[in-house]
Length: 90
Image (tube, rainbow, N blue to C red; front, side, top):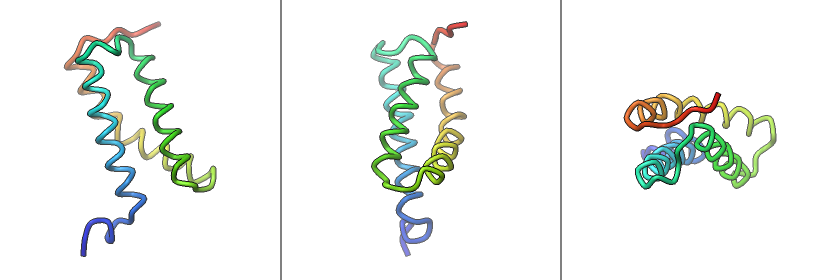
């Protein structure tokens, strides 16, 4: 039995997307494409919305998936913010 069969293709796709998004954000911070937390936040929201639209699921399920993705991303994102000097708008 493979992991995709055990947890489901959608859940595996969400986990892979989360890791790729964190890696992409880290690379963009290193290349000085992002300077502010609100830039990163809007980029995350746009990417997550686009990813969820490709799943072709109901809106209620998209809301749940969005919350799960943000829950997976938040701890790793906080570590990235500690590692790099990111400005925060008040």
